[in-house]
Amino acid sequence: MILSEFVKQRRAATKLTQRELAEKAGVGLRFIRDMEQGKETLRLDKVNQVLRMFGHQVGPVPMSRNILANEES
Image 1: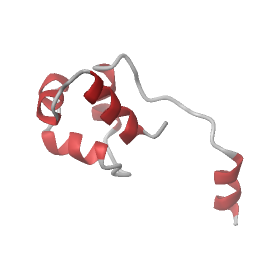
Image 2: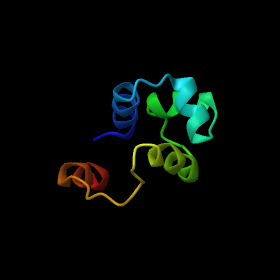
Image 3: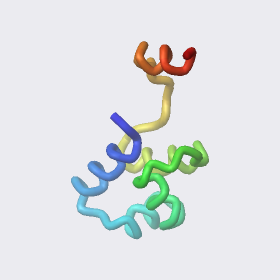
């Protein structure tokens, strides 16, 4: 699952606003907005602060062979 979708879904499931999630996670509102909009460059430590709210953390995930083939082209 894409990170932005994961955060949006979990936030909605817990009935938190973006502002409330930012406050609880100890990050800025702008960071939550950037994260949910799929910004490609985010600080990993802050991503983990947000994910920790949902019992998760960033980790290595196998890539699709299609993605790898496209990068080699």
